[in-house]
Length: 306
Image 1 (cartoon, rainbow, N blue to C red):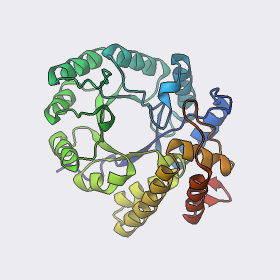
Image 2: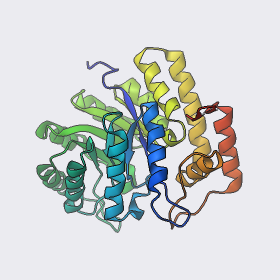
Image 3: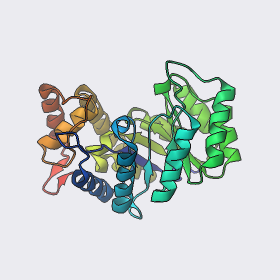
Image 4: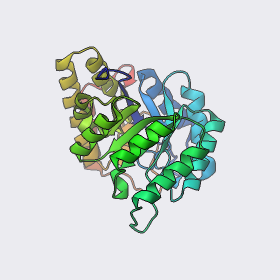
């Protein structure tokens, strides 16, 4: 059985700061990434959810990737998440830019062919094969509930065995039996991370390497403390960090997810910027509640938000 603490880690899906007018806020992005880097958390940028990736032009996406590389390369793992592609060609282009910019890896999102269409197994294999044959940078394959289907476990195993530059899997699904089946079948060949903090302990207990979160934008040190406690075998500390993390998760979701996160950062005087249209600012009452949770958890200190 693989070492249950091998490569244990957590990644934050970074926000993308914008100005109130909707422009990419490069200064705010640099400040935000530096704060994340100081915590030691791994970072994904330009994601479709927390990173508002669908609002980015190709030039903006590349610029976010360049800034992330300049601020974080050599300090913490830094990867591009990207958005769900319609075709393999879109994914291949992201791989090309990732190689040119020099980030550590790209996530390969599940194929979204649009209009509710769910690809057949043969189409999924063709998509992965076409993309992985062309992309040269390290790749993390994502199977994500947002597209309404999941990859067959056997197909994921085939891709991991066939392509040496597949270095990980990100599994985002409420189906714990599916997560367990993936982890068992992969058997430590590549890293497996679960999407969202709510399944962090389950994933680690099953032998995964860790979890992804948006909450790392607010509390990167808290997120890494759970992993540190897991690696050092401090069960009480793992449980305490998990309880705090889920409290923050609930408050963040109640405040509107990423719009609440950005509003809380602004309230606390921390770089984070504004959401970009069509997203609107968060509800004031729920943002108040989120800030109260952040303060009550002791996440604000003389050194800033951690």
